[in-house]
Image (cartoon, helix red, strand yellow):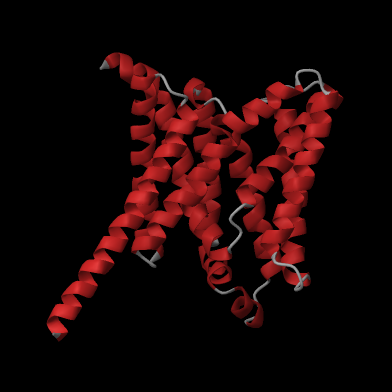
Length: 284
C-alpha cells in the first residue's frame, strides 16, 4: 500500500492540481466553441520554448524558456481576441486550427535545427507526470491559485461573453479586452500544465470533464463540481491501471477520462429512454 502511494501519490496530486483549474476553463471553452484552443496555445508556447533553447541554450524548465513560451501565447491571445471581433467570414475555431498547423510546422522546422529538439517534442506531447516533483506541483498550485482568483474576480463579464458573445457586444461590454485577458490566463495555465502532463492529457482534462458536466447540468456551480469529481476519479483509476499493468501514465489517464465520458453519455441515454417509457405508459 505504501509502495503505491509513493509511486502514484505525487502524480495524483499533480492531476488534482491541474483539473482544479482546467475543469473550470473547460466549461468556458465548450461554451465559446473553441475546443482546440489548448492544443493551439500549447503548440505556440512550444515554439517560444524551443526558440529560447536554440538562441540562448535555455532548458525546457528554465525561467527564460517559460518567458519565451508565455510571450508567444500573449501574442496569440491578442490575435484571437481581435480576430473574433473583427473577422466575421471565418469561424474562430477554423482560425485556431490554422494557427495550430502553422505553429506545428514551425516547431518541426525548429526541431530539425535544434540539437536534441526531438526530446522537447516528446516532452510536450507526453509530459512527465509520473516524475512530477514537489517543486513542480507547488509552483503550479501557487500559479493556478492566482489565475483562479483572477477568474473569480472577473467571472461575471467572462461568463456573459461565453454564454452569448453577440449579446455581450450589443450591451457594450469590452469583449476584445476581456477575451485577451481570458486567453492570456488560459495560456499561463496551458504553458505550465503541458510541462507536467503533456498536450494529450491536458486536452483531455480541459474538454472531457466539462463535456461530462454538460450532460447533466446547465448550472455553473453544478457543472464545476461534476467536472472536478469526474476528473479526479479518472485520474485515480488511470494511475492505478498504469501501476498494476505497467502502462504509460498519461495515456492511461486520458483513456479513463474517455471511458467516463462514454459511461456518462450511456447513462444519460438510458435515463432518457426510461423517462420516455414512463411517459408513454402514463399517457397510455
